[in-house]
Image 1 (cartoon, rainbow, N blue to C red):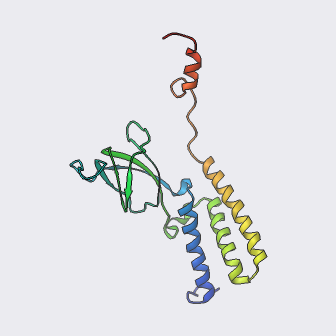
Image 2: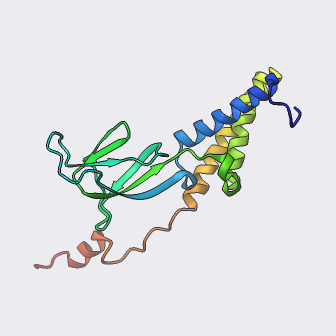
Image 3: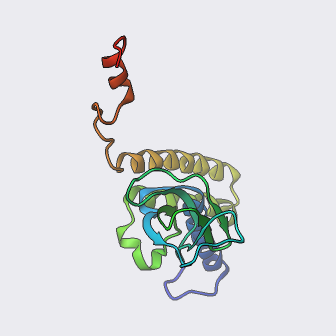
Length: 185
């Protein structure tokens, strides 16, 4: 392929494989790279009376999938909500929303971690192998390498997350229960 080639069949196949890789990897899998936390406030000032939930929130424009909702000051998880089109409904006037998005790598590919770059390249390679070489055995080998790269990317992304909070009396019911077992309070 030539760098100025934008019309050949090879270019079109490769370009489509790249688009498919980005969509499949980031729409189906959650990594720290494509996860955001945003605090939202209700878009309605008056409480809704025609719905089971009181408040309406506009989801962010880059929203892909919901990871979790939590109260913004007390940090408990919110499980009672409804999502319809680009809005979420619940009974809190303000929320923290954790969600995934599909990144625009034309804008931010520089910040892409190496393990995700390898994952995208492996996805493209296994997708192109049959179309460009006709070899199913090569496709199978590359697909197995892609699966291994996906597993590795999940592990590396999990390791990059925030460490767990240390366990002490305030965070563990087990420690408190063990200490007060057999005592009348």
